[in-house]
Image (cartoon, rainbow, N blue to C red):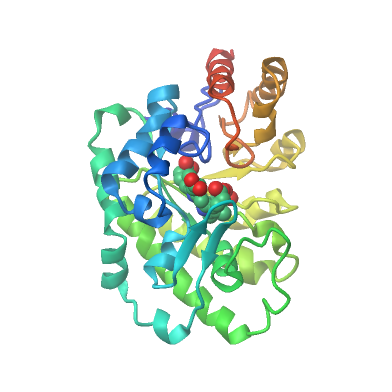
Length: 333
Ligand code: CP3
């Protein structure tokens, strides 16, 4: 059994497996080299050969315990026929949606559009470099996908004023999103994903109707993934009540962000925990990195814990600091 599964399923402590969110990406010179010649990000995600190479880059450098496929949460809107573009120094930009147009996409069309992602997983699941490692597939959570599909750009400065205006649109979209997230998970599992992570990057923007936007939609995805026999990790970034989330949604593991007090959380939460370290710590110095990393490891000594960050690794992170982080985690006794 892989170290992450030992932790998740057998609730082993002190193993401290490690992988990092956004480990396949812009802080790696070898990624930037490929990206330079592939200016269309969606097409890069749909190039199974290059995606395989990028997925394996951080494994070759740091020997992480899991590979996360090089893809994006916005491949679901793309698969549904909404246009998705990534603009330099701006982030994602999505096109207008119409329910009529979305409803033209059925399971077969969606699966065909995203087939290179499933091919990528098939190839990776046969790759010797991933023996004894997990292969993580992922999806955006229903709320976060709803946010991107309606808001059309990252809501860094909050949601657009009219976001909640069209209740019928929201209701219909949530139904469509639920259906296609499940199809995407099923396809990834059938192609060899051994774990699924659900990224709810904008969960912190939910201020009321938690049942409607957070708990019920996420629970539906978690229950479905479990039925497929694959463990599921949830990352409801920025929410104020992780213990309530764990009680209601009860995923196999929860990833915490860096605003969570880990000491307080383990008093209330029984399920395995992942992550927490502020990615900005990797931009400081080795001594500070050791102090902050060791703090998490000490707190989680008697709790099943997978080392990770409290959000994705930052593009300006130095390779040397990532090497040091892995060493600190692996040497910890
Ligand atoms: O973790 C990994 O290394 C696997 C690949 C992965 C990417 N995106 C590749 C990527 C994963 C798991 C994601 C998830 C994702 N995508 C999330 C959830 C996690 C989070 O960060 O909150 C979100 C919100 C997105 C949407 C998205 N994709 C944004 C907002 C951006 C632009 C800003 C940014 O963070 O880079 C992307 C682009 C993107 N996705 C890049 C990569 C490597 C950068 C592409 C580039 O410009 O070279």
